[in-house]
Length: 491
Image (cartoon, rainbow, N blue to C red; front, side, top):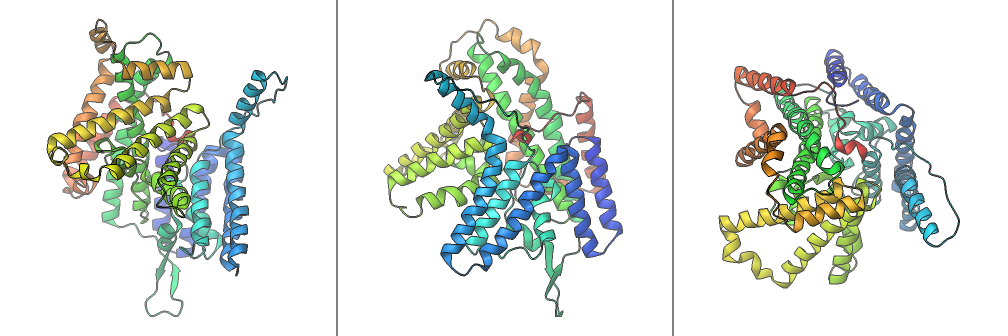
């Protein structure tokens, strides 16, 4: 079920109405769980079996890890549970990619072997709910979280519909406590939390959802045709067109994914649940590492805590281990996005960026206090250089064909200064270019305006209503009637 459809709006209204009308705590939680399963089934049909299997598998393995007395036994149970999760994810997401590489290698070595493709359907959201589960199991193993008290409670953590199919990636220790509350003066101690929809959360949540729809349906969906046209067959295009297409794609994927995240966070907040912020003005990052502290925050922090730190933990003083850990982490991060060499290259590029930055920081720590970087011109220069590198990597993310990819990267890096066709191209693509310019202007304004969601939600009711009406009319004015998938549904 796509957020940007009338189906979701009706579904969400039904959920809110039912939870508001019936105050029974147990019913609210059970209904929310069933609604989440329906939300997933509506999109994925029979593949819901995989979600149920993952939920049951990890609930019982989490309990087994917690109850085991010996550390060695705990580790064995953890390895088995992770193997189940990664095996399922690997089979559905990477089996056909692995078969393609094996067949290619066989042809190169004249082995006369050919494995038929499985042509597996990629289950929507499998990368996200698998990482939810893995994080939970590792946290239980590390004694960072007590296992969920019931299968129902754990299932609601995994399937909570706002973030189920495209994040943000939840941590059990952040979400599970929100399902329960302490009863003062009661012998019970802790019990199910009643889901209450209050005015403050309602206004902020609706504001976030409105801005999320605006990012996705006004900006991303209207910029994507330009991106598709340029990168469908980029061979022969000049540097200006390639650079414009790269900038357009970076803006498209940001508006698409951060728009989804805003809708998810807003919907959860209306229901009284807080889920983590996923974006924090990444286009204003002054270094590659800062970019990943601002972009897809729930994923970058997840791979830091559950992959990078365990790699470097034992030999934290070793530069080789540090750099190796960075490269491996970013390659895995790239592969998480998809089964393809372009995604591996995407991760490798970012790994190289952050590794070089880390080397510079270690070898020349005084550079951070150099007068140039303390001034506005230094900060602007750092932002521009960082974004130049980040947008170069977006080409590998968008273009899977190797010839098209390297041609586009060559034109992006080595300018050809072919200006004869620039004006004709701009005139024939006025609308998407206008969207790009408008986004840049509004993004600069939002950067200078802190907590824009909160400030809009605090407007007087008539001004807040005007904001919603203008946002809705702007979306509908340029909406083509065909809701498009969110980019991260593919991962």
